[in-house]
Length: 146
Image 1 (tube, helix red, strand yellow):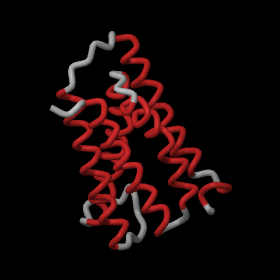
Image 2 (image 1 turned 90 degrees about the vertical axis):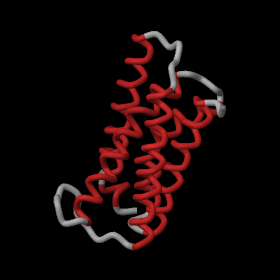
Image 3 (image 1 turned 180 degrees about the vertical axis):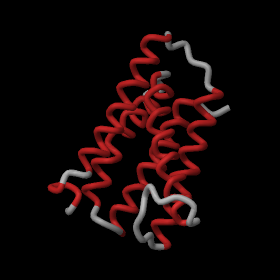
Image 4 (image 1 turned 45 degrees about the horizontal axis):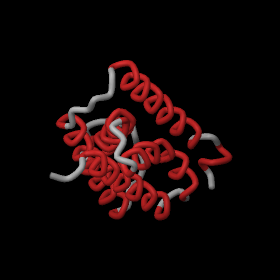
């Protein structure tokens, strides 16, 4: 059976790479680099086979799956929370990010770790906060328009 920490790292790295591809074909890669910074934590933890990778990855993957769902709902004409025009490459990358996020969540929910509740809660809280702050940072004019 594959190592769940490495599987989690691979899922996060796949989502990260797809988001960077979106940056290259759309508004510029700097914005997407800023948005994806928190994903590097679970990638590095997973490559080191740390059980904290699960707890660092879960909030990031939930965040990105939620963003992708909002984009899909917009494209289907059902909801206008996220708007814009999306190229075929960007749409394909939403599928990649969504699939990687979903796979990572499945790995995470199946993976039983020995991490105690307080460190797990701290990791979830820190990475949830980092992901929200990264999105906010990416919207600053000095980053968003480069």
